[in-house]
Image (tube, rainbow, N blue to C red; front, side, top):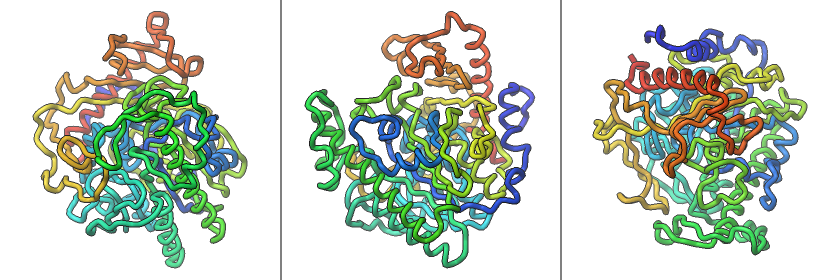
Length: 504
């Protein structure tokens, strides 16, 4: 790929992730076991350790007190499928056409599971996939993306969920969904130990995504929510009909909080098992959310906007890393980090070289070791608009999901996928809400606020104004212009990837 026209920002970013051998800093260190955990629609504010007034998350709180708390952790996208793509690839989701929820990966992508399996890890996925159908025929199922085994759902799930095991026909499992996927993960971990292999396990929970449901004991914890809390009417999916209903928010939040508490408890079951089997010290456990709080749940969000937006309320999520052997003292970090950093970080820890293609994340090993005080390159976000009339990238039949779920869209259950061909780059492809964040400032172009007549260019000092209330575009023009040039050059690189250039 010709890089002559890229800015110094992109060149520096590529050098960071490609020029240094991934295992150079940690070649002598033993490889950790790795467990990635992700909540579905779990917003930054929805943990006890971030100050929620009612939610009970004792396990995540304990992890935050004893591990590395990432106070400025971002989801790579403002919704689920896009962010999950960034975790798997270390690349922005627009590079391979995941524009929105229900858009699939491309088969040519190299995933973190591919790389860790190459390094000798036993690999498994449990829970929500949402990067393509999980059936055996899908070229983007977890197995095709590097997982030895999987028990997974095309999208999200509630109590008594349906899963496909290794691409087979969906089966229903009885019980609380977070506990079910963790139990499957523990069985896999035990098998990997018997085989004396390090393990890489991804557990992507179906909670707390709507429609909501909870066990009676978990619901009872929130029976006493104050009468003045959650008094507006909100829209969400009905578990009974799969269509939208309107309900009092306080009742909805009672169910949502119950799901979060159950997920937290399941994480505790995982941690306890690791402790009993002597694995906890050498296991890196990384929890995060996949996007900001969804509209029906916004009640205590301290940031601007919500899921789907590129303002902080759409992309700031809980993030915490626990690894007793290497993070012996608790720390809280205000260094910017993002889900795209997961692949480079894990590859460095495993001594595995990175793919020879543009990446958007960087290794956080220096942060784990206490050597990173600020991020060397900015983070960019972009809700691109899919090109109308583009031809399918994959056979539509291969993109049809199979696992049952409650939510219905215009064409049936929301479990089908798409991806489209981009043969070239056009000026209109640069459109859509987009932002770039450096260690102080954030530039937002065509943000969601523009729908209501807001400005098309906004600059915020996130250190002084995390709620993004004061637009500094008039007083800090030079900063805005610098960031806009970097953002434009980054977009050009992303669009070049979207044409398939990285696969040639």
